[in-house]
Image 1 (cartoon, rainbow, N blue to C red):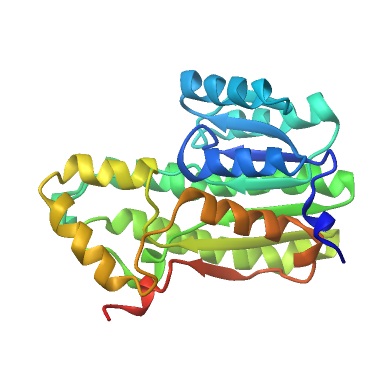
Image 2 (cartoon, one colour; image 1 turned 60 degrees about the vertical axis):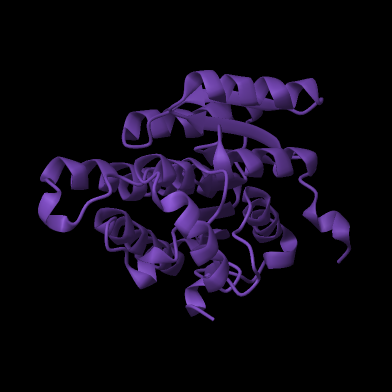
Length: 263
């Protein structure tokens, strides 16, 4: 199998949270590889701008506004791909929020509900409607995004960690069912990734941590740097390709060794 197996050749990818961060990098890398893109994002202005930037480079991309916590909006995003290009080959579930930075005794039910609605239910909705579409189209591939905190936990973002653990369990559960339909489903578990809404949000809420964390982060990542959105996007491209044709129900950590702990 040659490197051409990485090429999209007109296949269609739907990316939730595609306007920024990891999602934005995935849309760019997949467009460069020859995929046609549907960007689904809550931020309409940024989403349209991302599509215009891709179109200016000669790529095919369509924006659809979408709050992944709303099942009808997720269903509409999946349908947008089918209406525009009559197919859906790959879904990347990147949309997510961090939630409030607080210990559990200072959190309320609404804090928990919103994080679960976006980070877990949103993935559930996208998988549900993508599976239905892909079954009718002969198969496809779905890639969910969890976090290393699903395994390590997080002292101040417990709902986020719990939701991401749920994404892993959901991925494995669906893998036991959808493989018979020629649909592969896998999950990425990133560590610290710079230039993402979640990382930026953390530093906005914790400005005093910025300089202290910079050194701390380098010490606990054996590769000596946090990840970049394109690091994740390149792995996603591999997982969407025939090179990964027997990868199914897996959880792949991409963190530069961060989850190994301090050196």
